[in-house]
Length: 249
Ligand code: ADP
Ligand code: MG
Image 1 (tube, rainbow, N blue to C red):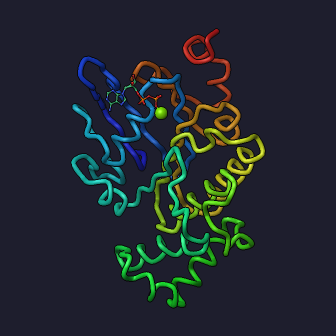
Image 2 (image 1 turned 60 degrees about the vertical axis):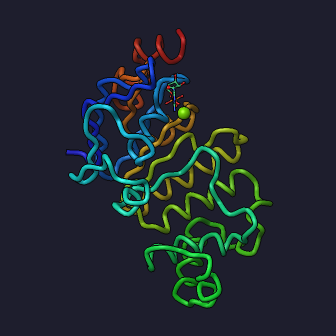
Image 3 (image 1 turned 90 degrees about the vertical axis):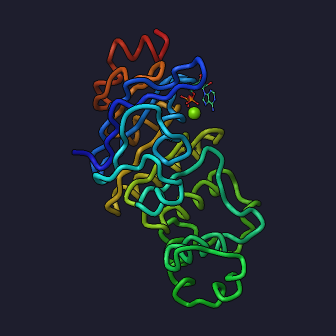
């Protein structure tokens, strides 16, 4: 059984069946990519995993426990962390302050603005945040204004902030969208580093085939709301159905 099990999931928006009969199993410790043309239902599926949407049918379990009906923060506390399509960081704060917040929230269960002053003097949180910045290869950007960084560095910070919560499953929705090639390659290297150095499972929705084939061990192709095929990258590359549905051949 996989760490994440999706069974017979369906989701309808009015007259549009966005997802139907989605069955997908993500193996613990793997990097699993979900690809498919625009409108295939990838983001809808991800939203069903993190509590933003509730499927009409089917089940979703993480480590054997159902996530359905739970609020996003509850699912986050179960050990699932999500990276958004546009980086969600605090632009007005420094890189270090950004990193301290999830470290604080992880230890104390929540972060409230009135805790800011004590957080800034908290040695344990400072050390933990410094360690995370080091691990993300961002120690030199510690005092930078987060908003002034490149898109790639914002993404790197955001991924680090997710990891500070010590999730066992990291979900990413098109993490390299809108990035220049150099930033994309840096993000690939970062995700490889993360996967190699911690016991984490990564599920990534991605449009960019270069990213998918550089990272994924398994690939599920979603087309019109339903999985078309699931296989290794090598087999997916040559699959006639995939070439037809996805690559438009
Ligand atoms: P993808 O991420 O693969 O591009 P989405 O999951 O965003 O696809 O969308 C799948 C389909 O569902 C699309 O046709 C989209 O227009 C539709 N859709 C997505 N979210 C909603 C919503 N909240 N209300 C109505 N239709 C939606
Ligand atoms: Mg999408």
